[in-house]
Image (tube, rainbow, N blue to C red; front, side, top):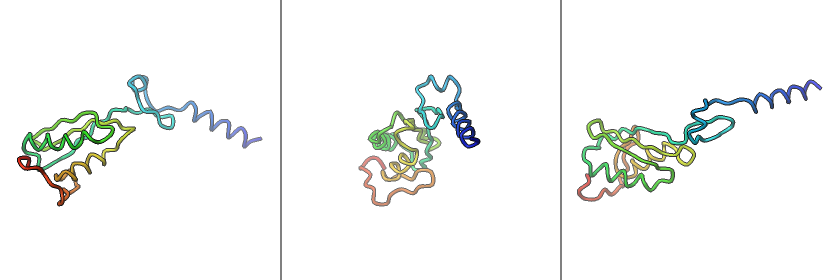
Length: 122
């Protein structure tokens, strides 16, 4: 009898639990195990070799092909690339890997030495 009460109490607590406020629930969040989170996330990537708009446009073109990509911007002064993405479709590591595969180091991931960067970009 005690086990049934314990299981019922645990199930009731799980059903009532939540970890987001009303604003997050209304902003088209992702629902995962009674927890709401923002669907559109942003992540900054430090790309030390990012010096020209042509390089940034090249990287942005590569990132657009990733499912879940929403938008991106760059800051040439600081060598930062900011990517907005849908958190339920893609992870931050995918963008870091795409930048590295395009021939540029990103965060602590080295550039792929076999990457062929078009003329006029690097």
